[in-house]
Each structure stands twice: as C-alpha cells, then as structure tokens.
Amino acid sequence: MDPTGAPSPAVLASFGASDPAVPLPGGQGTTWRAGGVVLKPAAAAETAWRAGVLRHVPEDAGFRVARPLPAIDGSWSKGGWEAWAHVAGEADPHRADDVIRAGEAFHAAIAGLPRPRFLDARDHPWARADRLAWGERAPAPDGPGADLLGPLLAAREPVSVPAQLVHGDLLGNVLFEPGRPPAVIDWAPYWRPAAWAAAVVAVDAVCWWGAERSLLVRWSHLPQWRQMLVRALAFRIATHAEPLSPPEQVAYAKASAWVL
Figure 1 (tube, rainbow, N blue to C red):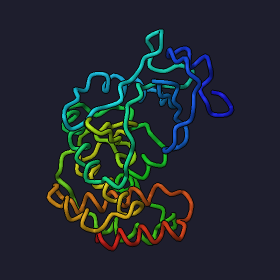
Figure 2 (cartoon, rainbow, N blue to C red):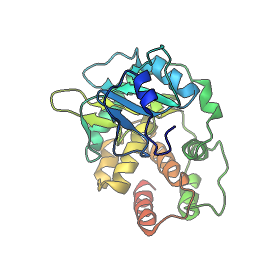
Figure 3 (cartoon, rainbow, N blue to C red):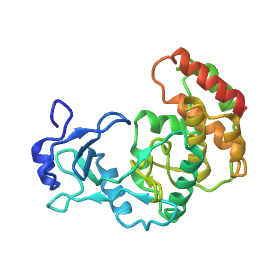
C-alpha cells in the first residue's frame, strides 16, 4: 500500500477507476473514493465472502446495499484493496429508529445464510469484545472500564433468541437519500441475534448522539431486549484498550444506569 494510506494508481487502474482517490470521512479513516468507486483495505477471506453475498442480496423497499466491484481480472481484491460501487446518501446517527428499521430489513434478507468460518479466526478488538460480551471469553479484572463491565456481565442471563448473520455497526453505516431506501454499507459481520444488532445501534445513539432513554423503551418489543442491551453495551465498553476518558466514562455510566 501507499505509505500515505491512499490506494496506488495501479490499484485504481485495476478496478477501472480513472479519477484521483480522495479520503472519505468517518470509520477508521482508511476508505477512499475515486469517482464511482469506493476502496477500502481488503480483509483476506472476509472480502471474497462478503462480495459473494452482497452481489446477490435482493434489495427491497426497506434497504439497498453497496454492490462489490471486481477488479478487471475478476478478483475481489487487488494490492490489498477491495472496491465497492459508490451509493448516494449521507449517514445520520440522529435517526437511530430509521437505522434500526433498515437493519431489520437487511437482516431479514440475509437470515438464511450459514455462519462463515472466518468468524472463528478473527482476533481484532471488536471480535474479542464480542466474545467477552457473550461469555465466550473471560474479562481482564483490571481492564479498561472494568467497573462498568462488572455489573453488566453480572446481569447477563441465558438467551434463547436464535443467532444469524448481522451487521454489528449500523449507526454510522446506513446512508439516507431522499426518495430512496436507506443504504447499508461497510458490513461488519457477526453471528448474533438480529435484536442485538439493533441494541448496538440504540447503545451507540444513547452514548454518543444524544438519544434519550425513550429510544430504548421504543424497541423493547424486540426479543429479550434487556439482555441484548446488556451485551451491546458490554461489547462497546470492552473494545477499549486504553483507560476510558472522562467523557467515555460518563457516557457509558449513563447508558448502564438506563439499561440496568
């Protein structure tokens, strides 16, 4: 990859992009756009799997998706990059209810897919935090946010909601365009109940985008909702590798009080 972080001219050409690449805001700062082509670092087996799924997912009135773009030679990655068709729209984290509804439509469309094997091999902070939240990994007793994690983990009860493939980071990855269904982008796949993905949206909105407790109440009809919220909040806290900043401590403490 280019030391500046941008896809090289050779990579752009391999995906048929003729415009110069410009960085896109949000996320981890590693996504670029060149005309109608959006490029982001590839993730080995996950890239090909995700492309194979999203090229065929049928859109409906509830959602649309960014379609994967193959390289000129037909491969799904080139030089460490993957490519997607740019979709119109803007993220709006203040529209948490609409994001949850878009997620429900997307999850209904992919509900029958089998669990991909690469999930077992993932070892990034989000995968480790997910396993911790669901009792598949033990927490560090003195880790960041341990004082908040303890009561949340103690509040966990068994859940009977079936797991499926879900998008685990929807709030900033649903784009709204007037007159068109919301677009689901940057799929972060997890094998959890669909209600958990909605709970992550609700927790993120409460912690960082000023959503009120009423948001949590509005979606309480979802199955085992309190348990989904407990695990969603524990998941977010557990992703931190450094001590929580004062604003993070306050935000998570408020959300924990509402959830518990």
